[in-house]
Length: 452
Ligand code: MG
Image (tube, rainbow, N blue to C red; front, top):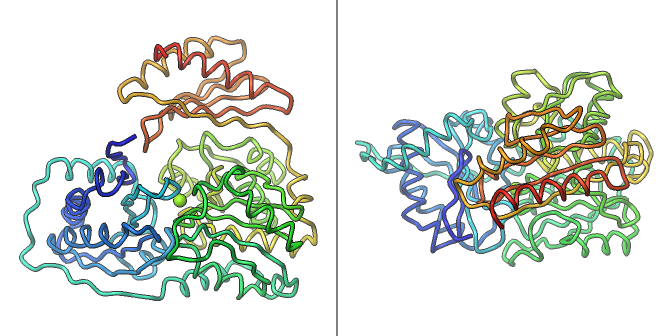
């Protein structure tokens, strides 16, 4: 994969070959053209070594277009989102390739509310970038800096927690920050919550300590550290600290799909209201909604889509099954900080262990696969899936985003990725096989349609 991936939420590619300084500057210019001169954006970046170069290029484009830039330094994606709102800025820019490996970097754009840019505006930004007709503004924008992000973020998260109740428990917590943007703010938060923190991979100058996606195979070290320390819980962040995975008190990775239903179950104990998630997220969320008698809204995959659905349906909580929780009381962006805080509050309030709370959720088996899919072939693939699986007895079809087929014993969601030339297959079913067989069948259909 070595081409520039341009999606509605931003741009990603390997630096410097694909995501060149020129591309970054042009995206800055395009965002400035969209906002207009005299506006202000906040800008943050993760710990990638290529961050400063991309920051300088984007800033050059923004300021040439007359937009002022408030540089937040190395901060998390939810930190940038919160500061966009906090400083009443007209938009936000995050320089990160999230969970992509080190050679990559990316630029993500946020709305004035701090949300991932809605699809319509994302498309407009892409068009402006493609047209590349950027007139320099009469008055260039100014650059200032602000180092308050971590404090503001921790304060906002603590405002939705019972800080004293958590602190009284003196939880022993192991946190793997993958040498990423979550290091400073998370340490501040967990200390404020009275935790005994064992912080691993907390060197912002070092390269990522393992593959950055918070999946079981990448978190062996965290599991071992939890066991050795006899900790109450282990947390793993991704490099821009929007996603959170949890390890239980036995040192077992419980799966990133658990982060959202566990924290949702805690929130609903106190605030009854609807939930939102995407079409690829576990049925555990349906179970939580049912337990509390609220409705679960399902949106197409993509943070902006879930955020929009949360606002539209006035949801009290939402997020994505990839460990991304969104609490509208903080900011409607995936936020590992609020995820950690809510989870610790859940432990404090119930007096139960992580494994006990996870055991209260229904157990399903989920299979996630991805297959290379040349751009332009997605339609053909989806048609084949619809023809083969949609005709099954009792099949329910949702085509809001790729195709999701619900069958009596499980479901499968086949969708082209927004950020990479791949097709994702997600299937879930009761333990003992249906997810595996549905995923395998979907894979055969996709491969046949692609002629591979
Ligand atoms: Mg991320």
